[in-house]
Image (cartoon, rainbow, N blue to C red; front, side, top):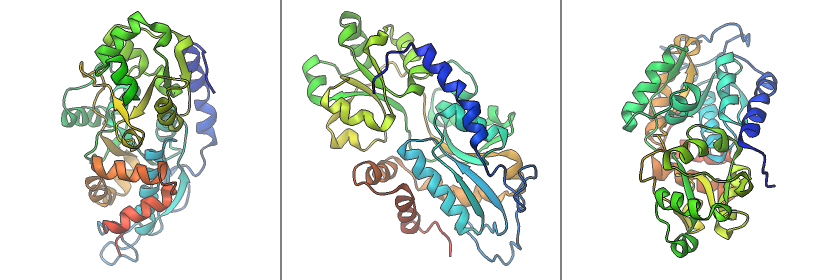
Length: 338
């Protein structure tokens, strides 16, 4: 379960698997005929739609391929997207659950998927290669949307929740060690490198807005022997137990922060950028189906921090399926049309 491979090796392995995973994506781009070389068309008579979503958008006869990353929140967002499109009359190929941000992004750029939810900080740092975030959530969104337009990627309206990275410890352990901030953690790591054990997913161990950037910003370094590479969903309960790690990477909207009595160490130097989620759509798909923007605007608006955290809890704590959680959310908010 644990791994002490060097971070560069992890990064190379992640990127080395990218081509294989993208090649495995099927369905391709959106089109009424299913031809991935042709852009999607709106399909149907919008003045008298046979099937329309909450925004009145008729996508009858259109085919889309929807992707997502592999963790709980992304699986829920992917299922929300699929069900909204199907309610508007579209046929959807499900390619959710792809492993790693670079893999999903490349699938979008290559036309193997038509859309997925991405986070502004990830887009700005990881995909566009910037070293520093833009201050302010709205300004960060505007910057990444404008820059990514040059790549023919459209960022639809963002949801008002910030799924930023965080480093957590069990509350009892944080209190015992006297740690409240990431500056505290840096000082502790400098004095106790072998005891600064951290659980993190492979992606966080390689990203500039992950552990390497965090170490550079706060001036500390954790030896590889103190790192355990784990699937993201496994980390919170292991951190709560303090075994194999005292500290762990997680997302700010993880409901287990409260249920497992974890403490988030304050990012007092504001290293982590804003991570507002927005549906990323290939521009040719949006051009052929401009109603997508209106269709998903109310969906995004309904996803605030409390709502997304509650949806994540239904999967991670209550054991419900992402598709069922997505449908209940959409029905409760009247987002399936009809």
